[in-house]
Each structure stands twice: as structure tokens, then as C-alpha cells.
Length: 511
Ligand code: AHR
Image (cartoon, rainbow, N blue to C red; front, side, top):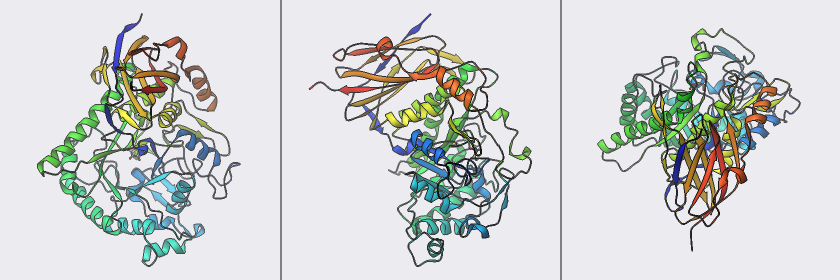
């Protein structure tokens, strides 16, 4: 049986906005094995001269990650960055209260920023507004971006790094509304602190972009009120408000899980509306954009909670979720949502990069491999270039328990100098025919890739990830599933059930 057809209407002149390359960011936190035995493992056979794993760095490049957020996450809220700079043998371990793990302070600001620089990644740093404040934030910024002649810049130089790192993106704390956060604040406390820290930081370096903490999720009881209050204190100062969202399948409710992109869509629209309301009230022409600096599939129901973690050391295995083809379809669909908000969401971070709810996994001393979620991210990062097109999509709906009615088909498209990429999700359990109407422009699909959902529980290890990839990921059968010649005004694409597809080709307007 086939679900009734869906229709996607596109035109090269109708655009949402330019896709900011920072939309394809990720996140490395001092949590579990993200840093130690993740990006960094001096004894590993592929380790470079700095102790960083070459195999992980190569996969990071293949993933297409442009920006990496560091050092947390919850971790940042009790971090003393000064304890992790200078000679490594003089650094002392500390007990990180966020993840109840002994942090050896072997990798710190310099090691991370130099790794990012070597790998062509733009860093996104977070300052501790949990246990610390304005002074520490300014000191760290001066350490990273200052010219010789001041205390903290000179310390960086004494530690072997002459040239400033010129870090542009700065998060004013992390999830400060969360009861789990070390040094949690209410919206007024945080708003004032973020304003004071942000103002001082812009005095050190006016070229930086600042991110104020939004709510930790749309489910937080203070959601909306938090955004309003925080932005009332910081509107003129900050550039972005943060959003965090993790999705997973609850009690086998596959339809709701496949509809997660609709929940993300509504979340973005609500945060944008909250920000605009503050702007309108103060008659400001400025538009606050969104840094969606944590998003992913995370089976939080399997996580015992921060407070129930035992105190551990030596990079313990914490939240190492293993992903399925179904999870990968959802990740692809969440990227569709992000692309459709290209005008409002310039920065986004798939949380996280390695081992911790990550597309890349490693074994200490052993292999590094791609989880199924790696493929839709890497393919979108590679193909989504130029402008996001403003599509009109009509599709049958699916009734879900968690989100009500959601469209069975979602779509996003990008266009750069005639090169088009089309991203399509079929959330329904049946194949669906999508009519892509291109209004007089000529569309030619050259190739495609597709991920289909599986029904098997995910199993730890490279063999399972490779099996899922072999069975559910691969080239899209363009010859068999795409109909319509270049001169036609519409093209039909038949999508497999529960699938995410990326198509690439050309789109040219008639002369
Ligand atoms: O990404 C894992 C954790 O999720 C981060 O530390 C925190 O910010 C969020 O709650």
C-alpha cells in the first residue's frame, strides 16, 4: 500500500536565507570518553605528535564538522580553566561535580584550541557562570584572544602560544535553569550575571559573538518566562539565545519519535517568538538568532541521572548511546528542520562528537567507527550549500501521541550556483510518492543517498554499526525512483517507508 502523494513546491528565487556553515557544529565536553580516548589518546597507534587520535580527527573531517563547542556542557559550570593550562606535569586533577568524574586536566584550553586549529574547526567556547563569574570569563577571553602586554595574554604566550586564538563564539554558561547544574541560577540572577559578564567580555574583544542560555528544553517549567527574563537583561548585548533538545523513542512509540522534527520546529518557533516579543517591547531593530548548541537523539530514559553516577576516574563510559537506522532517520529529519530555519538558526551543535551520544565511537587503543547517525549528518553537511529554499510542502498527516498531527513527509532544499540538494523524510510506514514541482525551472537529479529505519535494537560495537550501515544506508536508486525529465515542470520521487533521502543535482531557471 502506498500513502497518498505529497507535494513539494520550489523555485530558485524563493529562499529562506543563506545556510551558515556553523549549522554543522558539534560538541566536545569533558564528559566520559569524549576527550580522553575520544579525540585524545597519546598511546594510540594513530596518535599525532600532540597525543590526539588521527583516526578520530579524520572521521571528524569526513563528518563535515565546522564548529566545536568546548569544554561543556554541565562540566563548564564547575571548571577552573587556569588549572588546565601551562606545564601538564604541574596540573592537578579535580573532581568534576557535573559528571562525578576525576578530571586529570591533561587536555585544557591550549590543547583543545590547537587541535581545533589543526583540524580547521572553528571553536565555540563556554565560560563558567555556575561557580564563577565576570572576572573568570574576562580572564579566559583575554587568555584566548588578547595581544601581548596583559596578564592573561602573557600567560598564554609564556605557555608557548604567541598568536591569539581569536575565538569568535562564546557561550555565557550552560543550561543555567537546570536543577542539575552546579551553581544553578534563577532567570533574574542569571540574566544579571550574563549581562555583566557579556558586557565586560565585549570590552575585551568587541568582535566576539555571545550566546545567552535559553531553557534546557521546551519541557522546563520556566520555558518562555526564562527566555523573556534573560533577554530583557541581555537583548542589546548578546547575539544568540541557546536551545537544547534531545529526542528518543519512548515505550515503542515509533510514530512520535519519527515526528521529532515537528517538535523541534515548534520549539524553534516558540523561542524565536519569545525573543521577538522582547525586541518588540523595547522597539529594537535587532534580531536575536538561535544557537541550537545541543541537539541529538539521546535515550535519556536509560541514563540514571547525574546524581546517581558513582565517582569515577580514567575516562569512564558515560552515556555511550548506540544508534540504529531509525535513530539515523530522525537525525536526518532534525537536520531538515534546522535547514528550514536557516534565517534564524546560524549555529547548531550535534551533541556530541565522540563516544558520548556521538556519531563517532572509539575503543581505547583500537578502532574508531561511524555510528548510523554519522551518514545523514555528513551528507547534509557536504550537500547543503548556499541558500536554503523556501519550500511549500503539502503532505498527508500522521497522528502521534506526543506531538498531535505531524506531516508524513518533510523536505528542505538548498541551492548554490545551480547545484541543488533536496532532503526528504518519509515518516510513514508506507512508501510515498512526492511530486516536486519546480515551476518552470529545470531540475535534474544526478545522485542520491538514503537511510531507512530498522526494527532491531542497536548493539554496541563496530560490527553492528557496519551491519546497520550496509543494510540501511546507501545510494538512492535515482533511475528507479525518480521520474521526470529535465524539461518537465515537476519530478516525482518515490520514497521508501520510514526513510531519509538526500538528492543532488541541478536547478536552473529558464533563460
Ligand atoms: O550533552 C550532554 C549534556 O546534556 C550536557 O552536558 C548538558 O548541557 C546537557 O544537559
